[in-house]
Image (cartoon, rainbow, N blue to C red; front, side, top):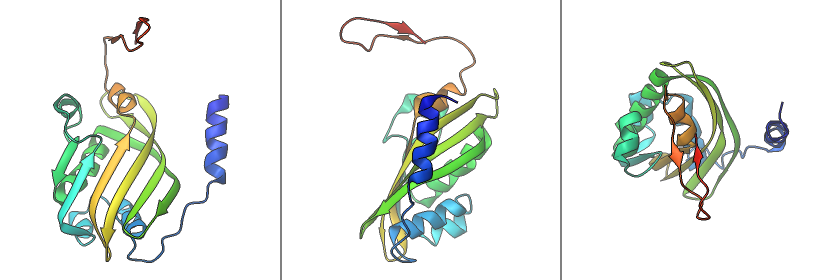
Length: 174
């Protein structure tokens, strides 16, 4: 096991996950949704009528070609369909919450997941972050972020990228 992996594992083991302030707090509601995110009737009970879900980015047509759920959707259906699709596109090997916190109107959860793509059998591990906003036992906004470079590469069958990111001029092929 690499030093980075050991450090990450040890750090995860020592972080205490925040307990929700109440059963109706944003953190408690987010945790409930994540316990059964593919059941539309269940999730609708925990979201407002004007619910907004942001998956991976606000609007990226190129990414949406690979991950159709990417972008901003209005309504609970977008969040539920994302979790349905994720379970179609990958096998979820691991999903670990490492830390969480909340304030009066918002909550955040951080962790890692490991997925194996259904089409190519490639396994990737990514950090994730979820931001949720809400009140009175319902969420009005959820934003889910991950390492999309890693997750998209789980579908890459061939080819390489020629990258020119360094302002000093160096280039690399990946």
